[in-house]
Length: 316
Image (cartoon, rainbow, N blue to C red; front, side, top):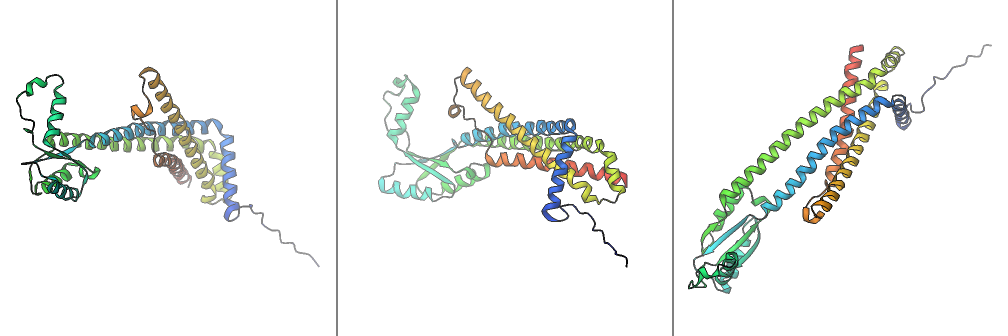
């Protein structure tokens, strides 16, 4: 009686689930160790590209912060025909505060207005001799919330403010506001355009650099196809390799950026006698840092999948 032995097909420890994923990760790490020079080149390319984007973001974030600080100085001044008494003033201020977009309201009486005017003359107070102390009108100085500082929003706010009884005139430097907002819109447009261009350039560079890794193992890929390996089985280690390269490039770019940031602050402190609080410079917010890391991972993944698709299709 012959015994029939059924040989069990050897399987990877990762035939399914976590085991297969662990195999792909080990294979990706082995690929990296076997092609150190090409992988260093790829990681360096990703790091350089992301560093350019990161530097731009750092400059843009600080410009936005400075612009937001400047826009906070936009102030609407409402003048009265006659100075209201305490009861009328309380009612007027409550009505102004109720207008959507109002952030802060300060009352400036006639005497306070004259004191400010004298302080601005700086030694030429003699010009005001004989001028009555109450010649200047009383007013409300109104600071606006961020969303109400745009052109259309501030004009709509002023329209509503003029309807408040007792207010005779409203001034807010409309020409300055329009120029400032136009400059900020232009800055955002240029920033978005440069960012889009840089991202496209980075994707192109990364895709073509990762091709070097794939072509370095061209014979291996062809052999795997000949023995019946599925496309997923072939692609997965390379995709994970691209993710590792992207993450490493992003972390390297951030390390260089941190060094450049603190190096600049140190130099500025020594030569210009600035402090971080005085200079107003800040590092990238956590959400931007996370975005750079995620962007590096995505670039590595997209670069790998693009290169693999072209290679495998060309072999079919």
